[in-house]
Length: 261
Image (tube, rainbow, N blue to C red; front, side):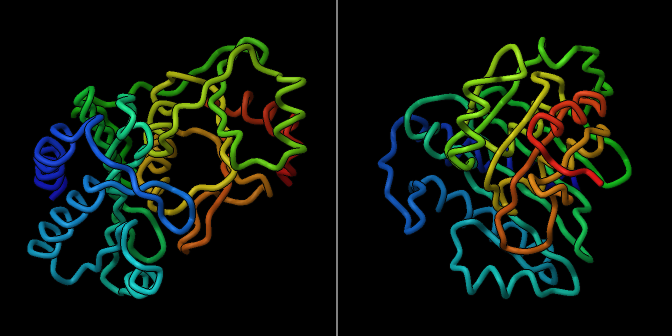
């Protein structure tokens, strides 16, 4: 099943995303985020492909209405959750950091997920309890082996409280900071050891479900700013605090004043 889905997603991305990269018009959605014709084209093709092959599994796409999304979650056979274009702003601006993200959830657990980066032809995927791979090769085990003051952090300041954002900006505990603008790839890059710390104030389930599974399968440490599990089988946005290993995670949480008890 997994190989066929991955092949289909890659082909759809080549057909609908690559030709439109940096050459689309952005439209504003009600929540202030962006939407392009590429988002809609990918979602339409992926939905058709999945429902033809797996008609009993429901489908939830980012560009569906909230009512449609709530209905899709209520399925005994499980649900596909798709972000057809994670990193739409990057995509429209010609910044090569965007991806297609797809997860399969059953019994309120993420069973399988993939994140495909068309620009680098990198496909991260994971099966619950079986590890994670990058282009069919197992990802190397996370091992930061670095102190927090030497680490690199990826932080989305936009969705943090002003107080927390200000404290981080004035007294950063890390050495260097980035913000890439694509949640799905952020989780996968953290899983691959390309940076060490992560903080985001508001992620939707289609943003993080697949990427967070990849990260979890590499035994990374994460929680919300409230100290809860990041994944929640609902449409409620979640914050995310994460680090490449447990030692860094505890130091990062201590700085952020996250209660882990």
